[in-house]
Image (cartoon, rainbow, N blue to C red):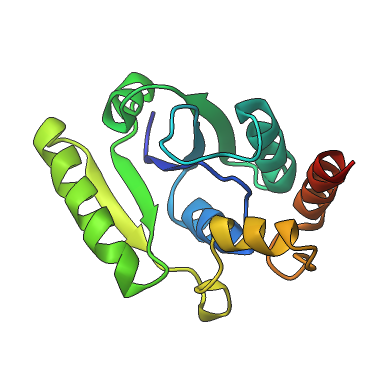
Length: 163
């Protein structure tokens, strides 16, 4: 895989901050694989199938973006598909410590794979998937935080939980 990068996460749900990172990554690399994590310590709202569907639908206009799920160490997934770059998003300083530790761990495990940090545009820097879920759970409008199709997924999910 030539000049390929992986942008991995749970994407539960996909936010405009994620979309910003995907869009800018697609301009930097020949191919971007958005890797949706199956195994996660986080409590997820959406199944992996739903998350993959949301990301595929939201990114279908990018010709060089693929979406796959993975269920092992990210560096192993990167090796499997031949990617040499891991893209990680940094929203705030609080993200840095965790991401820095992960980057160093990944470097130790796979020195041939680099980590590239990208920050979303300022207008999206405060949005997290967790905050979106919390707003939705409390009945708030999430349409300014997520693409319309994701907002529809969220609305459907919470209607099911309410009834």
